[in-house]
Image (cartoon, rainbow, N blue to C red; front, side):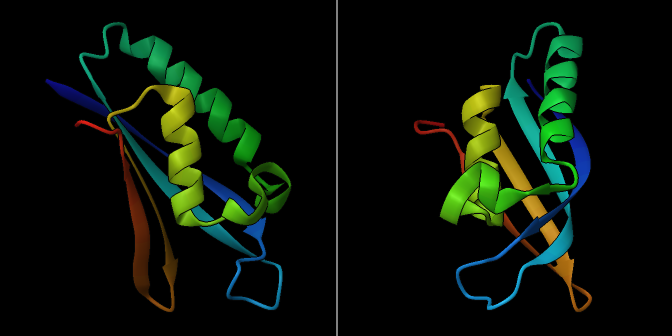
Length: 103
């Protein structure tokens, strides 16, 4: 059985391909296998999202302040099977999916 939780945060970054610091609304879906007490994972996700919300992602993640970087960061911390991170740009959804090795 897989369980998941979704969250949203706002953050700013200067992407490697951009000349400007700018902000996005990011959405996150974290999936766990056999999560056990789901409240623990939910609360841990809430704590991590609170640290990202309205933050300069370059200060937290360096040159990995991208969808891919956020997904890998959360995946490593949260013990997830997968982490999806996406944002909207010009009416289109762009995202990345991090997957734990061997899953």
